[in-house]
Image (cartoon, rainbow, N blue to C red; front, side, top):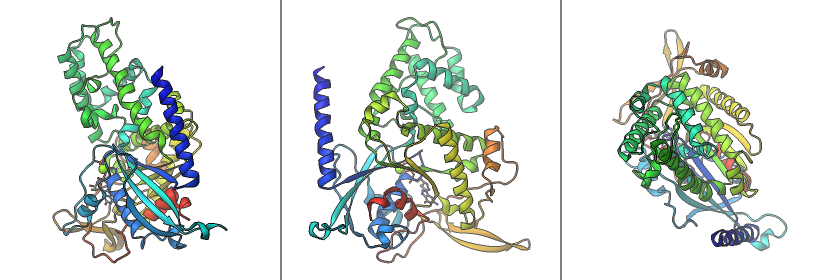
Length: 469
Ligand SMILES: Nc1nc2c(ncn2[C@@H]2O[C@H](COP(=O)(O)OP(=O)(O)OP(=O)(O)O)[C@@H](O)[C@H]2O)c(=O)[nH]1
Ligand SMILES: [Mg+2]
C-alpha cells in the first residue's frame, strides 16, 4: 500500500517535471529503434547520428534544407543506469582503414543527440536558439514480441507453441524429450533444466531458420538472466497437475517471467517512446523463402499490436494516455538491390504493413514503409548478358575481393510473393533470390558529408523531421 502511494507520488512529480521541461525548457523526443537480431539496428543508429552531425547527404530533411538545424552534438544521456550506445566504437569499426561491421549487441542502450535550432516566431529572435534533445533507444525486437505473452496464460501459451512444433524440424529434440516427461509428476529441477535447454535450443535454431515467432525473447537474448529460474521453463501439454508438479512449477515461472522480465521492460523503456522505427530485413526473408516471409508478416502485426492503444489492459494502464506518434517500418540493406528494384521492395514492405495494420486492427499512430540502406556498400553497374543489359550491384567482400551480383528481380505486384507465402508454398515458383554479404565500403570522405546511404534522410524526415524545422 505504502509502496503504491509513494509510487504514485513519484509518478506525479515525474509527469509534472516532464511537462514543465517540455513546455518551457528543453523538449525531449524519445525514439525507439528496434528490429529482430541482425536487422541492422546498430548500423542504422551509427549512420543516422553520423549523418545528422555531418548532414551533407541529408537533403531530404526540411530542417537541413532550410538551415533550421544550427548544430548537432552528443550529450550525456538522462538515464544513468542504462548502457550508452557505443557510437564512437561502432563508427570506428565502420570507418577504419579496414572497415568492418560492428559487433552484435545484446541489450538495451541509449544515446542523446541534441539539436540547436534557429529561433522561430515573433519572440523567437529575443528568445535565441531553441534546443531539442533526441534520446535514441536501441532495443531487441525479440523483446517486443514478448508483449503478446502478457495477455496469455501458461495454458494458452503452451497449447499455441506445442501446436506449431510438429511441423518444424528444429523442434525434434525438444519434442523427443517432452515425450518421456510426465507433466503431472513431481517437480524435478534436472528435468526442468533439460526441457528449458532443449526448448532454448529449438528457439535458437528456429530463429536461425528465419522464424520470428520465437518467444520468450529472453531465451534468445538472456543478458544477465541466463540460468535463472525465470528462464528455466518450457511449454508442457495440458494435464491434471497438482501443487508441486512439474507443470505447476513451469506455470509459476512463466508468470514470474511476465511480472519480473516483460513488465519492467515495458515500463522503463517501451511506454516512454514518442516515435519508433522497426527495421526489417525483408530481403533476407524473401531469400529464405515463403515460410520466412509469411512469418515476418505475422511478426509485423504483433509488433503493431504492441503499439495499439488500448490493446492490452496491462499496457494501457502504463501509458496513462500517452501514445507513440509515428512508426516507421524500414526494409534495410536495400543496397543489395539495383535502384530499379527499390520501388518493388518498398511496395512489398508497404503491402506487409497494410496487412499487419489490418490484422492488428491498428489505428492511431502515423505509419510508413520505406526501403533504406543505413550504409550503402555497393555501386551500380550494367553488364551485357545473353544479348541484353543486366543491372548489377558491385561491392567488396570481407576478404577484399570485388563482386558484382544480381540478387534477383522482385515482382511488380507484391501479391506474387505474399499470396504463395500465405498459402504455405514451400518455395518460390519463379525467381531465385540471393543475398550477398558485402563488407562496409572503403571510403574517402569529404568534410561535412556523412556515410553514404539510401533514403536514410527520408527515414529521418519521417521520424523526427517535423520537430527540426
Ligand atoms: N549491405 C548492408 N548491410 C547491412 C546494413 N546494415 C546492416 N547490415 C548487415 O547486417 C548486419 C547486422 O547489422 P547490425 O546493425 O549489427 O544489426 P543489429 O540489428 O544491431 O543486430 P544485433 O545487435 O545482433 O541484434 C551487419 O553486420 C551487416 O552485415 C546496410 O545498410 N547495408
Ligand atoms: Mg545491434
